[in-house]
Image (cartoon, rainbow, N blue to C red; front, side, top):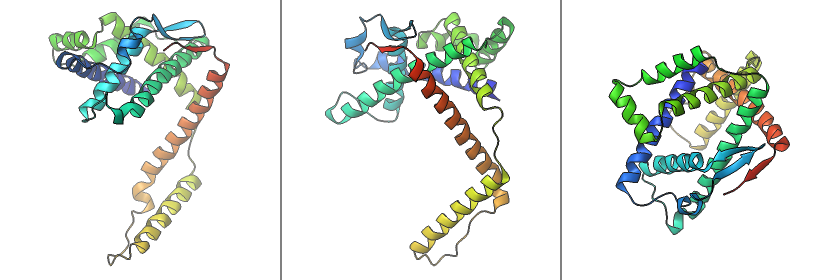
Length: 241
């Protein structure tokens, strides 16, 4: 299943990058930090490995473009705090990705050339024509080798993360406790509204699959976040922006 998530992730990256490319053509306004950072070679250094400034700026532009697609305009007094929050999130996300990639490789995770080409063809196959694929790459500022690098790194990270959480499960007792708590909360809210409509709530059988998935995801995120915090604490991180 995580292979499908990798393909989806890369498709989203290409789509957002394409939007960012179009936005940059249509508007002279760049990300708030672009003029200040383009002359710096690295945005951060993680255990001696540089995160290139162009990677940071590309991720930042893509993120701002995604916000702008939802009607948010930057470079105003009202959005300064949001801009700072976004820039912090982007650089920290890149640092986290590099930390996880390094740890995954230290643990022996890799992607064979056969697997790499299979994943590459899967991503490429999401586009109706070769021309549209090449256009998406060009608008995103990627080459085919860049895309292969993204595929390799994303799969290595995903395989490592899956190894951390593969043995987690959710018990029937946890599902039932969650259901009863949610049901009681919904009933209390209904009574507080003094509604004349009778209280209704889905049966456990109707929602137990969703509850199990939600609880499992929560456990997985907790484990991953805990390990990531440990790795960050032990890493030599230098933010240069």
